[in-house]
Image (cartoon, rainbow, N blue to C red; front, side):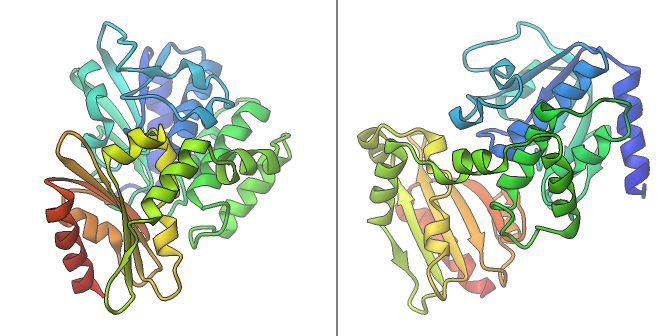
Length: 325
């Protein structure tokens, strides 16, 4: 078993020895996924390497203020028209999380897997997986410091964004002394912490507010008050003019009810799939719960996708949660 330092050096060697990289993150990217993609892109640009950043779908509009975020290709609209032999996956707990971007992986492509999810199955030829890290951005902070590159406000803002979003504004239990030390260092490069927090954690679009209202109208609690859940349907989304990124944070509302141990957001898709986002107050390992249904994540935040209807899936998931309480 390699040490963290050895894994860092192995990734460094990979980046120096090759060229023409593909950088990808998980489907429906969040702040850590986007910022990690851009951090790798920034490093490769400093090294004079050729690279392409891509995701299965669009980047959340609120992330467009980050360095070269507009350069992350949306595969559903912009196909690179070729494949890549050297791939860097960031913040992808398992290979399935790269989604349709695997179409542009060359056969037998060499994959670097940089991630912080405990459920990561180490699918890369080179793996840099740190389950104790608060965010993939935290790992990339260490990686970038192995290179002789000059930090600036652009890269500092990207790393800060990943830390801010995956720690819930430095409120979650993964906010370690190291995280706060890194954040302090990043602020010294000119990161505008209050502005980023306002944009990413406070502001809501009108469709986001409307779909929140619709979701809260579906609120249900278990008899003992320890499980709370809401759901969203395609009809809700259309009625509110909402898109997937507008669902960000809704799962926290059922979770924040006093006495609730597990909060869940169920999102029904037209394809017959239901996505479940799970949040724990700390007593229940929701990553283990998500794995039962083929998903994964963190002890306190996880998710899964299940084929079926809301009517059938909600009681199945709730029953599994009850067994863990």
